[in-house]
Image 1 (cartoon, rainbow, N blue to C red):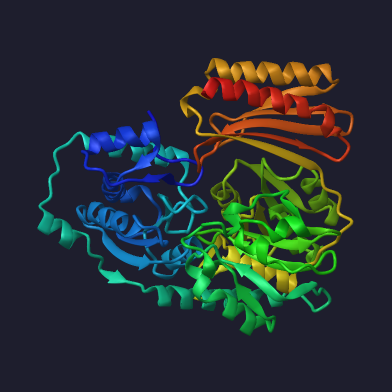
Image 2 (image 1 turned 90 degrees about the horizontal axis):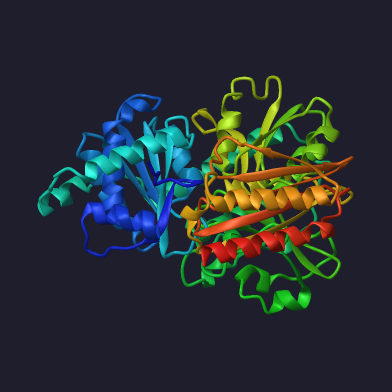
Length: 531
């Protein structure tokens, strides 16, 4: 049985070609194309099984970002929900963290954010939240997927007049209301952070500070909010983009990206091209992705600029509160030295490792909320810029949430950078448009790559072991060790885009150069298998 869901919800290329529901399911699984029928099926499956989710009532809030297909997708999702007596509220043109917050503030049973995050504007998808603001997990997603497929085999016609009525929500939360809620929530969170910080840490922030909201919902208001709140002159650079995520935003950047001054001037990326050089270590800009749940900062180097990734953002949050006991959840793609850094700050700090995806960070930490701040504080981190922090909404609903704007403001207002932190090294190779079905734990391709990796590493003198990680069904993850030198090599299908990723991580005592050849060999095998 196949699931419609990947790492972070359902995603695919938006289409509206006339076809029936069975055909819509076929093109999704075969070509990753997303038809409006999928949203009606999803709405029906949710409404019919709403009692599987925590909370009470039948209210569902649907939010979406500014992608061409999304208003129609929202209508079809609403039809599916209302066919089975759900009450639906719309929040058009908003962000994922705001949808999360609105679910809590309105005591809704579910929230659906129609977005494909950092994917191109031609894609869309949906992320599912329960009444606690937690994203869905694979077991329930697989069950819902099965219900959707069963429904597609049934006759369930609706007259066009009834479609128009069923597609209407009970209430609409305007984009202005959503923006105001986000601002109120940010100010509330900042007032809470102030209780635990003094003024001894001051970031070196360039004026004007450049903000890149990826032409998402924040691009109309965040730069002026940031300037009025911090007193730091700021400018939004994504206003010039043609559409959401087009040569702008955090989705166009990745950990490890660097540019010389000359390279930055000719970059196709709106923010990188607009950066002004300052002294090394100066923070010159901040970028969020299209749906607003992750963040990167940009800092000056000796001869240009580089991305400040999620691991480094988390270190900026942790350093000023070294007397606090922390529980830090980190994904299997975080820097191998980051765990040592966390425990070096305070011997009482604890770490947990999770699958890729901020939902795993959230679920790892959510169960500790009742003890959070009484005994310790919590933080979740992915190097992709997802930073998950504890939060009370303005009405004091507790949760853990990833919010790119909150991350940016916490790091810049209360963070600290220590340049003597030693990081390991990472390298990733992405192979686009693969035949994803050829990569699984039961495939000959998987076993061949596993054998190649183990043989190669053992010939270099490393001890090896394969690992299984909850939530990563088809992940190949091999740890290798030689004394204090250690690393991991991994292969996984991306859960958000049509690509397969090969990644290598080593700590600073491990010679990456001797292992690079393995990545090239794995890439060659995969490209040949996917061609």
